[in-house]
Image 1 (cartoon, rainbow, N blue to C red):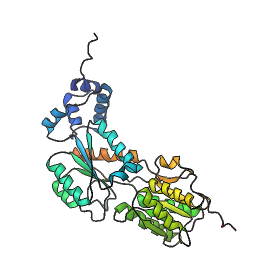
Image 2: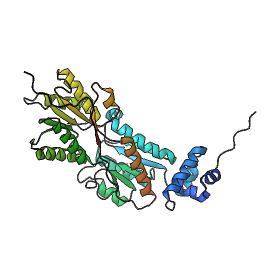
Image 3: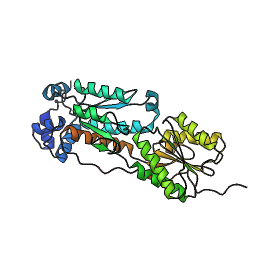
Image 4: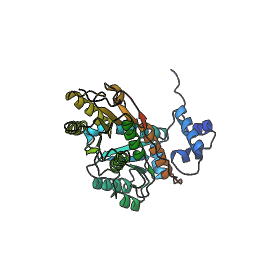
Amino acid sequence: MTAPAPRVTIKDVAAAAGVSKGAVSIAFNHKPGLAEPTRERIFAAARELGWAPNSSARSLSTQRSDTIGLALCRPARLLGLEPFYMEFISGIESVLAERSCSLLLRLVSSVEDEVRLQETWWRERQVGGSILVDFRQGDPRVEPLGRLGIPAVAVGHPDLTGGIPSVWTDDATAVAEAVRYLAALGHRRIARVGGPLDLGHSAIRERAFHDTLQGLGLGPGVQVATGFAGEEGARATRSLLLRPERPTAIVYDNDLMAVAGLGVAAEMGIAVPDDLSLLAWDDSQLCRLTHPTLSAMSHDVHGFGAQVARELFAVIAGREVSPLPPRVPSLRPRASTAALRPPRS
């Protein structure tokens, strides 16, 4: 019988990383006192040796949960369909796996429910920190969570997050680029199908869309605020294409609505891109699987999720967090956008 392989210990990880056992403990307990390259070297050595700390021992020694909280105010069905959150969560998980931590994901029906949930998580020490998403103007989470002292990172523009360390994308710049691109193709009637206006990023995109069109001398434009589900995107698209002066180009706030809009155009006999250009957001695999393929404002959502998780661990460790420059989605032209054709005689 083959003898079992010797059990890998913290001492082995320390030797492989060229540090003390205490340094390994500091790294995995997310405490300050280690340079980031040293911390990453320890995690790499642990992964290579297949070692993870004993969770029970860690709990007894640190009295802190090795779990990160994320609450989403979204319907469960939509969460399973929307590419953004699947990619975002996978990015978070990629960082949690390096640190042998877990994600506690809960769906809530309102922001008030989330506040109560976050208070319970923190009071019962179920999480070491939380990721907060979908910020609103005057967001009701800022004051109570700040009072409790919950380590948190906000996904949203700093103007919305009340001083909570934030990671965000420059939606205004991206919207302006999208509109200018369509205008350069000759489009003068450009519409937008956006998310609910109570969400801060939707409101930022709405203002940027309006201001960019006005700056180009194209009027205020037409915007429809709706939910993020495909059927809602389809309904909004149908209402736009039934207008007496229908748009010749539409920008969507997510991929799911853009794919639904492409289906509505086909249903109504409107050729894309000959008669109508469509531009999506986030650029998931959906955009490359449609026919025609969808042009998009591309955003590395997986990398964004990983960045958010790393920032939260820095906050939990008590390290000083400097504001990060925002990510700016970039234009990926594909087959769903083209120069405006003259009206058919």
